[in-house]
Image: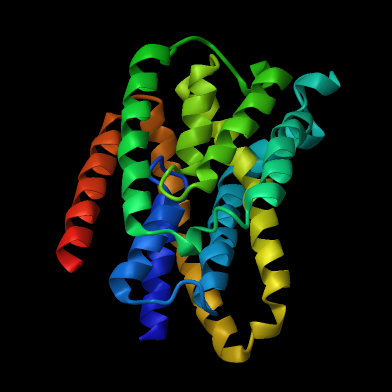
Length: 267
């Protein structure tokens, strides 16, 4: 059953990590439904390390573009280089993450807190998609350092489970003047250092718990997340070019209400 649970959590991670629906919120809710003690090893390790598998999918999908923008950038100006913007965007995440991590542990979150974040986030997504959606020629090089810093700051809101890192960074980018495609691409690229850092930090913290049995569960869950996320990234990039985010807002409301009802009935 542990392997089955690892596969289920890996599928959930891969499906939700890069969509504006909150992967951490879904994993917390899945742990509640499956009766998993999320704060105990190996599940606390899998929660973060499965993100490593998902982010490998992003690196594989964008590797040509990443290589070109890193080593053959369209502009030689350091302010327009993608690495400069990612470093600037990471500053708030690192500073606030180290400060607030112990106070906002997603593993200790109640389903009600996740449900509330899902519903409130749905309202924000709908409002921003209506008010700030732009359809103009724009590339990643057009993202300013100010926009990068503010997106990084907004991303920190996702430390509350149910908010969604992808949702916060994409909607934040759109509110700051980016098109849906550029905001999504920047969100994906920003996920690479953010999630790799979280996964490596967790591996180091729980290195003494990585017995062969635990390692198997983590590997199975992460590999599943990688395969599923690869398909999701490709589909989502095609989606944002043509459609609005309303279906994700509706889904968040439905899930949030369902969680509140289920939690009330279980009391």
